[in-house]
Image 1: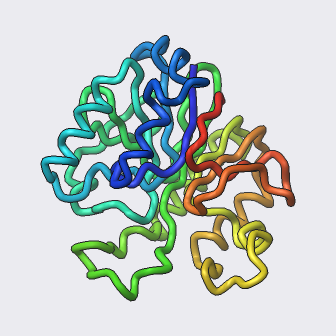
Image 2 (image 1 turned 90 degrees about the vertical axis):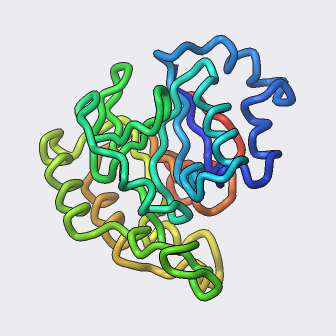
Image 3 (image 1 turned 60 degrees about the vertical axis):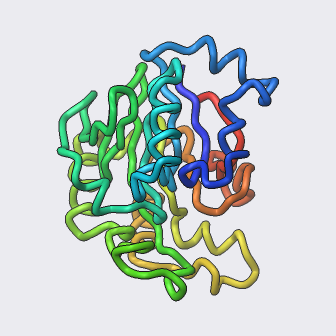
Length: 235
């Protein structure tokens, strides 16, 4: 089984952890029935690689000891110096960083083959609160994918003829992001969202999930796309 959820932000608000606990009456029996061969995927803003504080180490170990394996794409609120200190390895057709025994980062621009599904991943987003953050301390330029990330994505999608089952991103394509708000200043278009517009125009997919916007629900402009935050969904 594969389950997807949205931003956890390092469980800075511990209420975000309740989605995996017995307080979540609907999902707790399902979560408890999972094994390490099952996956819970976090759609960006993982945030448990930030400063190695006592609290962070506790929550990372707590998550590592859950019955499932945790997979995550990166969002914008990550410590990319820490994340990139983990070596890259091949896993199920794509590249990962193994954070612990059962917590893996799904690298950008990959296509993974998991449980009979082809899953395309492209993390990253632009922070709209950079003005109040300090570069290299609470904000990193690497939050935005590089040209090499885009080239990696195109190369891997070419291998699958741009036909996958699931798309996982932390941002929406520019054209779809613009449908969320009447005023676009909060989430303006950027090179990543413009690239995702190109992907959206070419790719064949069954479902597309994105975090970042702290909303839960299907996108009115395309009901194959779901913005996900605190809910859990089966893939």
